[in-house]
Length: 529
Image (cartoon, rainbow, N blue to C red; front, top):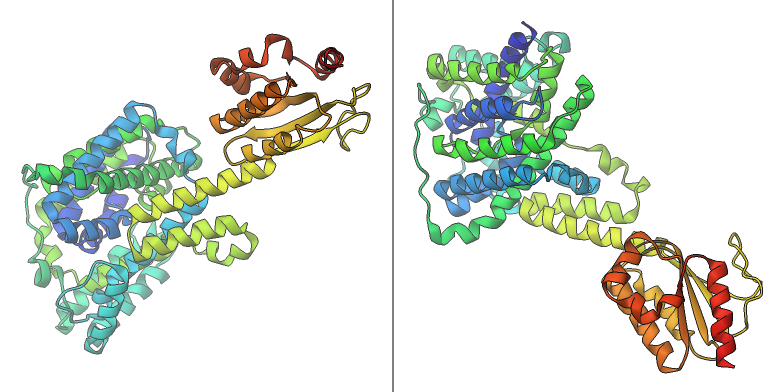
């Protein structure tokens, strides 16, 4: 019974969101509804989370609208199918943990950017502006809307304000059974009908929603365009995986469960591959509807399936009524959705964040708003990776320890010959930090005959660092001097062994601890004299 009531409640909420997101994405209201029905059913039936709700998501609005305008609807459908294949393969190859590698500044940046994008798509409907062509790009869109602002329709604005007021002020306890968004839509329909206001509706703009089952049709594939669709398809797949797995993680916290991330990705892949055959748009798990599903008592996938069946019944029985829904009421619903999905506290907390994280966040946010998610996520990840390398490099240290004067906090080296120097290395020796070994190279001259690299605290190494060590060994060997490696282990040891570097250094010059290294250095030092 709990699953039944939860599914019906979420279905009521999803009704306005599916229609509104379909309109916001630049397709038809029916396309959004088909996505909620088919995608929602498949995600619940096949997914790895017991309470996940699938359907059209605000995260895709800007990208779908842009792709539809640039490439056309057939290419968008093919692109969604390709994204479905990518998602399925990600799950099949156990890449469900990929979400762990998306830095928080990137996810926060594109989440806020998507929220602004959704808001920008609703300005025209909320103010009833007369605009022949609305550009998909943000800056041209804002310029066109500003020029069209003198055409504002005050009937539309008043109805929009009323809708916003109803959604915001609707009691939370009532909203668990009758969502404020649905009440706002019904009030909007009544006001337009009773007052005869000339407000744009689904019927006047889209000729309503076709009643009956969605029709199966093969998307038209232009094989010459497939190469151009790989990048946007990959972006849709990445966005779908992030949104879905984030939603599943939130659901786990609310019901004290653990989802199967790989199964969830495969289910998302199937949904995104199947939905385009019925004219639908990209599918993902959605946090808000999933959270409401849990709050209403859902305990199994049955609730999500009932939510999809409810939408199907509305399509079969009550589709003609949707023609009277005012677009401005749907715009109010999406404005509230956008406001609630944005991580706005991130702007307030920027002064407390590290400057590098703030740069990544603002860059991802700006690119999401002004351009598209492909550039935003790609460049955001590149910046985050560069920031990660910089931070790793800063933690890596190469300290000289000679004679009885050890570095403060470290062991002192006793009875060390004057022509022997010890360098203790801490941290990861990766390409961003390998230049610190140049200090050793520069000091390898003079009266130094033996260099000991104390590597016990080296956690990892890459080929750049290995190349620096090979340079050091070659220079020392050329001048008749020696290199001793002290305490290399795990990844650095196996990497040097595989590359043959340990053989070049010599088995006698690879030792386990500092005492053995000093003893070996004394032997080599004596042989030099």
